[in-house]
Amino acid sequence: MSRQTDEISSILKNEIRNYKSSIEMEETGTVIEVGDGIARAYGLRSCMANELLIFDSGHYGMALNLEEDSVSIAVLSNDNDIREGSIIKRTGRVLSVPVGSGLLGRVVNALGEPVDGKGPIAREGERPIEAQAPGIIERKSVSVPLHTGIVAIDSMIPIGRGQRELIIGDRQTGKSELAIDTIINQRDTGVLCIYVAIGQKNSTVAQLTQMLADNGALSYTIIVSASASESAPLQYIAPYSGCAMAEFFREQGKDVLIIYDDLSKHAVSYRALSLLIRRPPGREAYPGDVFYLHSRLLERAACVAPEYGGGSITALPLIETQAGDVSAYIPTNVISITDGQIFLETELFHAGVIPAINPGISVSRVGGSAQLKGMKAVSGELKLLYSQYRELQAFAQFGSDLDADTKSRLALGDRIVEVLKQKRNAPVRPGCQVAVIYAVIHGYMNDVPVSRIQQYMSDLYSLMEGEHEDWLEKIEAGEYSADIENELKQILAGIRTERYDPARVKVDQEAQHAG
Image (tube, rainbow, N blue to C red):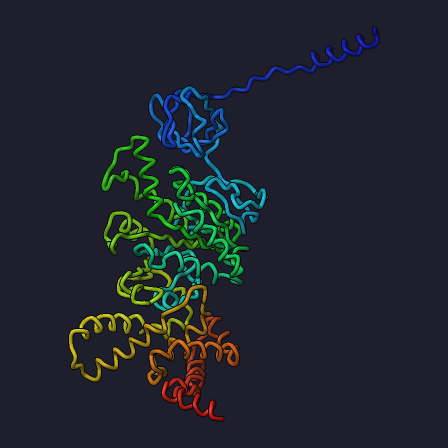
């Protein structure tokens, strides 16, 4: 018994000898009001803007309004467990999300937490969701094309790596499809992709994930989902979270494509958030800093100079218009921030012209300098011819007696429209795009009926990829010369267009049947 007492005594003496007094200070506050995803707390006197706060229930919040006596907090989870009188404490760090290669192929929420049921994510660190955009000195001009695989865009409205190109149009005109096809076309290019779904249905995000997986594109893509069922604060931070993930890869010298689908819903979520925390409303009830909301996000997309790490972030924001009104508040804001826009027209979409791109007000202010030499040479006339055709078509429907020149322009325009039509998930490689555009502009399709243009294009692509791979490689390497053009002329001249004549096809079929 005495031995046990001596052991206990020695342990106690050792503990007393090594005892060190330390005081840990934690600044806490008390929730005085909560509702609709917003909490107000008293007592957080040293709180920072955008600081991550934690409630006693384990939920997180983000500090927004720092007022004299209280702090307005956006609750970043279900706020059912938060009550008046709940304790909230500071974490001392601003809101951050996990980053790293482990996120590729995964679906995460706005906080970077996995929501695809595939287990935890191996993270390589964390980044604040808000970051300063690269300065002028750090940037370099856009010089490398980002191929979408969509003939109409790569030829008339080209996009370069580091550019910000707006996709704008009414609901259900194919905006998301353009963005998804662009992601699919980045396979084997080394471009990593991030798709931010803001305010969409969970079923839509699930379909998108499956589509990318089926096309082999999910392995290099991160999907950040802030669905319609989630609170306004989560929808508000989602694009910033996606951009923080993109910046991690850019700092490693990699090229990233990020899609914000869509910023109209993002602005609406920010409006709801701002009105709930009593910020004064402005035009259309949006807060006064709604322009800054998107400008500070899109300015982070850039092509960085090699001496500062290289790499690029290309942003494709989507905006939904009402009845084609591009002069509304949010559309004009984002148009003024971006380097061009691709406008999708409802009438064209319903007429079966897909993608329904209006060439008149669609423009790329940067991408032309990043276009392939061959594409720049052959597509120079395309946009002009297409725009003229749209004007002529509007007048020709009222007149029956047209001169020969007008008829030939309309016939050429019909073929251009057919060439620019494209099915979903069917990207066309750049060399084939150059060949087909050259063919339509220089009259090699004049004898092919409009109804057979798609068949002609399919045969041309097969011919180029099967027998003229070396020519395609020259074009895609950025070469173009008189010799290369002459080689293309010989290839196109060797295609027998009479076999696309319906009457000739019928005769051949009857002869084959009789044989």
